[in-house]
Amino acid sequence: MQHIHNYIDGQLVMPVAGQYIDNYNPAIGEVYSLIPDSDEQDVGQAVQAALKAFPAWSNTPAEKRGQILMRIADLIDQNMDKLAEAESIDNGKPLKLAKSVDIPRASSNMRFYGTAIQHFASEAHYMEGTNAFNYTVRHPHGVVGCISPWNLPLYLFTWKIAPALAAGNCVVAKPSEVTPMTAYMLSEICIEAGLPAGVLNIVHGYGHKVGAAMTAHPKVPVISFTGGTATGRTIASVAAPMFKKLSLELGGKNPNIIFSDCDFNNALHTSIHSSFANQGQICLCGSRIFIERPLYEKFRDAFVEKVKAIQVDDPMEENSKMGAVVSEQHMQKVLSYIELAKQEGGTILTGGHQVQVEGRCRNGWFIAPTIIEGLPYNCRTNTEEIFGPVVTLTPFDTEEEVIQYANCTDYGLSATIWTQNLPRAHRVAHQVHSGIIWVNTWLLRDLRTPFGGMKNSGVGREGGFEALRFFTEPQNVCVKL
Ligand SMILES: NC(=O)c1ccc[n+]([C@@H]2O[C@H](COP(=O)([O-])OP(=O)(O)OC[C@H]3O[C@@H](n4cnc5c(N)ncnc54)[C@H](O)[C@@H]3O)[C@@H](O)[C@H]2O)c1
Ligand SMILES: O=C/C=C/C=C(\O)C(=O)O
Image 1 (cartoon, helix red, strand yellow):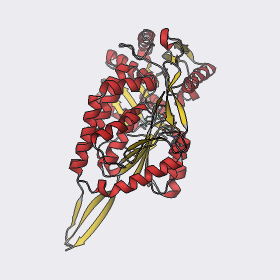
Image 2: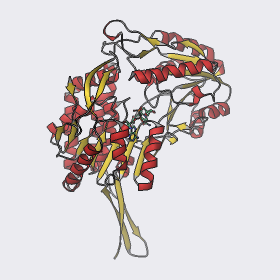
Image 3: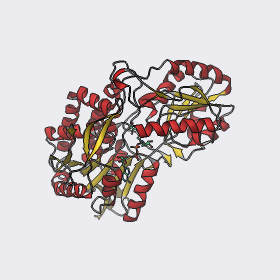
């Protein structure tokens, strides 16, 4: 069976304690590889390697650092098919999705920050009347920790490490233990691309061991984390008393607001993606669909009809639109929320159950896309993150009412608004408490924009120069002439 290795000090190495964790193919329901069950000893070695590499890497001209990131991007592109297949096997997502979204975005992340760092300028402030000026240098921090989740494995892993490396930091990174394979393949790519030893170190294993050791390590002053809100809280509780700098990208329970005057076909088709793409396991999925009452029945009936036609099948099938959810444990969690929705008075319009796919996937973990109506806007099903192929439909009568519905959760990541009325689009956008608003679209990403959530969806922003500012420490020098 294939063993995944840690990537420490430029080498692919076994975990110090020699222990491994089973890695499952969720579409088959079987173990297909083994992941290092690393601990604080491996994290300690990774931090030492990163500290050793830091002086040379931080003094490497930005242009040269950028060139190495671009080489990594080229190698991701050259290995597109292999990486996409590995992502699909590891995560259960349709191969087509991995090929069209996950892996291309991973190379875009490297390319974006490989070039962004060439344009990242420091500020200067002249003090009129005093004949003095200030210039601000942005120093890399040293060793930074990057911790990522399982839903968009290589996409979110590279979204963190690219700006961290571009800014001149050395990195200790931990991909999710549920989907480690493409991060492992990335370590091979980094070696081939000539990334100097110790600049990026990838330590595999459990969050409560590897992630916790990174968070608590005194030589890792910065943690960038994407994952669940509860985990973010644990990390913050350890990091805050150590005065670490934190970026937290957490969960969401995003509203998808559909007004009667929307472009109906566009709203309908995009809502299918925003509900069920990646089996609904994207933090940006619009899991609460609010429909203005005059359109409610028309939208509901058309939506249910289209969703009933979605075939859940083997993610490796060329035309698969919906694959497996990531693990048996996650499937049980999602199914338990469907039971909760029934107890809370919801009506299942379609789905609501596990699916057994024929053939090689008969023991895999699949859930039918599920639509529920008839729930109060503030019940648990409508306020807690399910993170699976489950959406609720709720009618509304006025703007004020739907804004209240939209804002009634502790989350504030993203929202989508469908209307042809421009003033209304802006009016509603400004009142919805979400860090990311889409009008008449969904998941249209410009990598230059600030990305992140309000309320319990996170702290700080990724993307564009925000990430380069996060991964650097500003130092102001005031000079009197
Ligand atoms: N806001 C965003 O950009 C965004 C993006 C993707 C996913 N998410 C969220 O991520 C969640 C799903 O991902 P998940 O289940 O992998 O999340 P998770 O919080 O369980 O795990 C995320 C990562 O944190 C690690 N971890 C777990 N416990 C830790 C600890 N005590 N200390 C340090 N690290 C620890 C895990 O091993 C994993 O690598 C959802 O809530 C989803 O909304 C948010
Ligand atoms: O599941 C969460 C998705 C996060 C997406 C991004 O971070 C992005 O598109 O940059």
